[in-house]
Image (cartoon, rainbow, N blue to C red; front, side, top):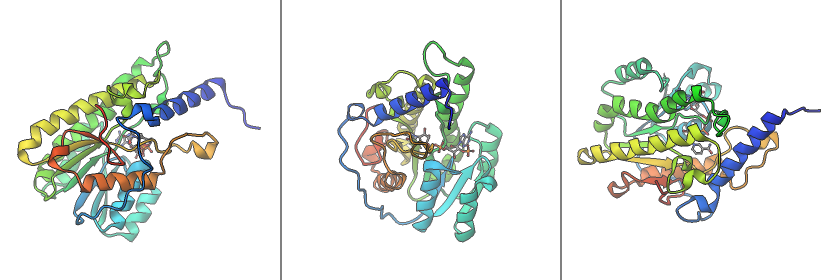
Length: 281
Ligand SMILES: NC(=O)c1ccc[n+]([C@@H]2O[C@H](COP(=O)([O-])OP(=O)(O)OC[C@H]3O[C@@H](n4cnc5c(N)ncnc54)[C@H](OP(=O)(O)O)[C@@H]3O)[C@@H](O)[C@H]2O)c1
């Protein structure tokens, strides 16, 4: 018989409630239609994905690789990511690179290794909820605030700034960042209590995306934030925890790729759901 501590159960309940709220119709700009995106059809180029060892990042890498793109998959320890290594063994156009987005030296080293390599699509995906631990008023873990801001907000802008010459040297010139409605003022962060550090870091990230989009407009670089919907990347279903309204990871990522492929200059500086709907900042 499994024994689950009360604090673990309470945390899981909070996570499910928060994720449920983030997928609830009231948390969106408009109700989502049943998402059945068709695969994107833009000509393959070079894409770089951060945080690709698992979850949405890995699925992005898998789909772009299968679609014939040159893919640069970054992870903190790529050689320990078994599925990435296996995929790279079958696809010579998939290149694995080490990157910790919270470490300036790691970002600079990647920039140097990629000098002169055009990157059509840069996808800042690396990020974490930190399990929503210590993120409720009354029991806030203040020691974790800095790390969450460093990972979810500072990391993507650090990577984008370092690899901007690569993006500008490409044909498509797109920088996408995977954000969350948890960081949306317009959606009231999903309308749920808790998740303070995650919500704050994604809200800061959204403003950085807006700022970067404005600065790069005249240079022809398209910049947008993406919402993947609620995707079970933490194995909740396998543990019997129901997440109402969740989206299959394959459908979410197929949708994200379609959004990226069809991104227009008018959409630069906006926040877009995987199904193509604009999201409130
Ligand atoms: N899943 C959802 O429902 C959902 C909803 C809205 C937004 N998002 C966003 O989507 C993105 C991906 O989420 P996910 O659910 O796929 O998460 P995940 O399965 O937990 O994967 C997170 C990825 O980020 C990487 N990462 C963590 N810290 C890193 C660091 N310091 N440097 C580089 N990589 C690091 C992890 O790599 P390691 O293997 O090295 O730990 C892992 O590859 C995140 O930005 C998340 O906030 C997800």
